[in-house]
Image 1 (tube, rainbow, N blue to C red):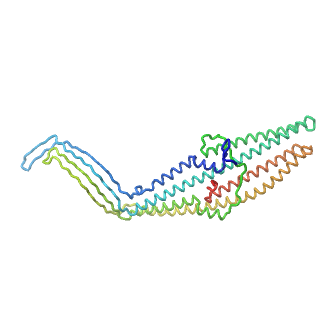
Image 2 (image 1 turned 60 degrees about the horizontal axis):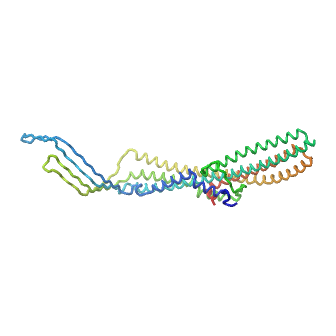
Image 3 (image 1 turned 30 degrees about the vertical axis):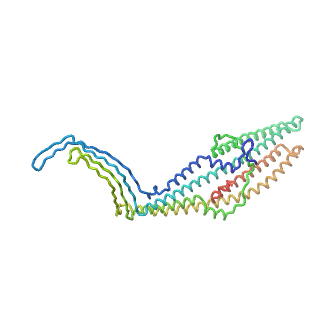
Length: 424
């Protein structure tokens, strides 16, 4: 179908593209990813020195009393001493047991974790919107089927009314035809509500300004991919599944936490340097003022001999690494089980779909034959209704089989890390 008309016509791809641009959860996830990327700097890891500029002033008003060795006493009141200072101070940790290098690697891992989290959010969104898109297709098809049922019931009611007037049908036949027509009409009205609910959900996922805005979609059928291969899906899952990649990142982070703690086993070297100026003014002194300025340099070499927590924290960190590895193995096993479950459901639904396609052909032929006999008066209204119901049930079963197969397909694509193929 054309991409543009009097109203824009949406395909699954255009819905996904618009949703990825506007959906609030996706935008928040991308912002969090950007924050993690911005944090990967040498300064944040502690590689760079710190440089401080400071200035100060202090004054002291005092009364001085003195007594010499010969016993002479003196007193001076209102003595005001002043001190002015300014300086640059440089602090730099030259070595801290490889803590700085570990911090930088940790920031890089957190950046990678942010990318994986953003990917998980995007994949969940694509899977959810794709499922809702085909649910909307399903509900519209079901609405069309119910409208067809209403038209059949209306035609049957017309025939019964005409024959009732000439005495060929009883009042019971007329009342039954009206009951069936009203029942089909009620079902059609209820289905309109389900179509609108799916439309609202689609607009919400796409972050549209009006959730009730009409949405013209291109697809009028649910087309399933029957060419998926279990072995290929499993291989892709083990290599590209986002949740497994996230578990690998968490395991790496647990290892870096241990290295950070082990840095305390090493000595540290810190450099301090500065350049300062100081002015002292004396209220009562042989020297009325004193000025000093110039550089100063110092270095500190130290090691933490004992802090009471080091061994405990490192033992716990090793356990955390083991837990991260076990969590990853547990996740892989769970994904294998989910893949097996969805694959079995996928294959069963494909077989069911083939069977229902055959049933629909038979039900259609049966309805056509029943209609011919009904028009000739060889078939009762109840039997005609049964033929009509069989046709509608066959259409409902094949529609449900198509949608359930599509849901299994979406789940398999997501587990295998290939869900973004729906964007293509």
